[in-house]
Image 1 (tube, rainbow, N blue to C red):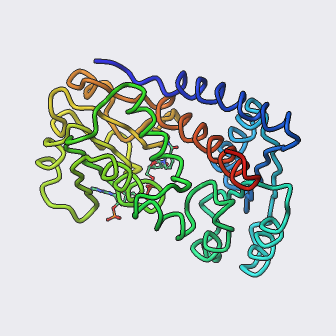
Image 2: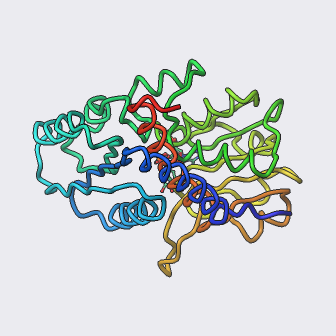
Length: 283
Ligand code: NDP
């Protein structure tokens, strides 16, 4: 069994991106990310802080827009329009979740697709479906990068994803399909879940329930990717996989923390550099 070290790999990715950012700056181009944070969700604040830290490390400018939780849809759209217009901003990220009274779909649609470094704008989602070059949403993109680095073959593999959210499950399905895996997507209405997950050569858990994936759900020698970020009763971060028991059966597994999480942020950095280059016609 090998543990996929997302933390180390993310460091390597950031290191390579720093070289690219340095080169851009030598040519007078300063990559910049704008992050919109609405309200006071403590977990979101931590994510935004980590994104800020990664930007500092890579050499990407970071500007945070803290909005009151009572902001209206109109005010949010106006802010997005302003950031779309600003030439100094290359990437725009709206940290989710946002308060329930706001329309997140409309907000994602409004972000200029060329600055949509999270890959949530329908144009970028559509391009992913068509297998075209696009901004791939950062969590699935990070997972694909991990599989590639660890030389885990996707072609012809049976991949099973638990979870069908727009930000993880669906783009993960598309990425694996685009890389020639045979993909099954499970969700809360799936029957005989265990029978399906047991067929997986690659199993991706994106449910949001601690220790949901138990050893009886996993085939011997499978690759298990744990996207979940949950807090247990002691306030400790845990994934969706019962790591201690499952790890005995698998060929590869991602830990939580230190697996998918850091890679998600590293791929966000990748997307900001990509956006900056494209906006400046740099190859
Ligand atoms: P959502 O709540 O949007 O989606 C959860 C999915 O799990 C849904 O599709 C749901 O099915 C499915 N599900 C729930 N219960 C069951 C069940 N009993 N059996 C089968 N499927 C079930 O979550 P997200 O996709 O946004 O996030 C998933 C987890 O990943 C969370 O812990 C989140 O914190 C974490 N996360 C981690 C990231 C990282 O960088 N590491 C990035 C993003 C998220 P249905 O559609 O039928 O309701």
